Length: 132
Image (cartoon, rainbow, N blue to C red; front, side):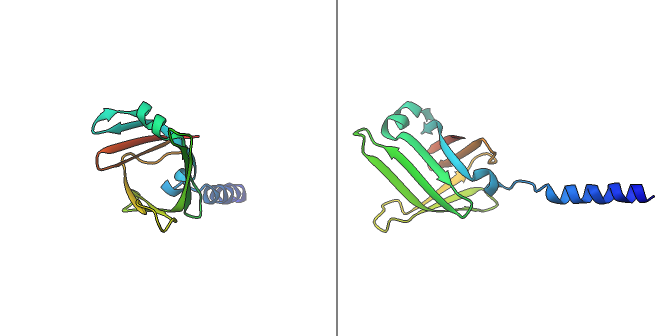
């Protein structure tokens, strides 16, 4: 009986340490574009030309950083805060730059976020991102 109790206690200890990952946990890390669709048309090569080397990084504290170079090679760095809202169905990005035109961006999460896939969309655009 003591042996069975010991095994049960060990099982509970192990089970309590196994934390199920949340959507937020999956999101943390660095992502790059895999596919870009606009108005139902695949335009990944256009995106990659305009946003060369695009990367977005999310940290566990709710901050994000975006980086890319435009067609003229000028680097752009954007930073701000991120949140997941509406039962993880919306990704909200708030830019830290007070002069930003796109200070608040809301993306619909199109499929559940995993460690390797992030699929989001807005009005007529879909972004399929993969972990870098």
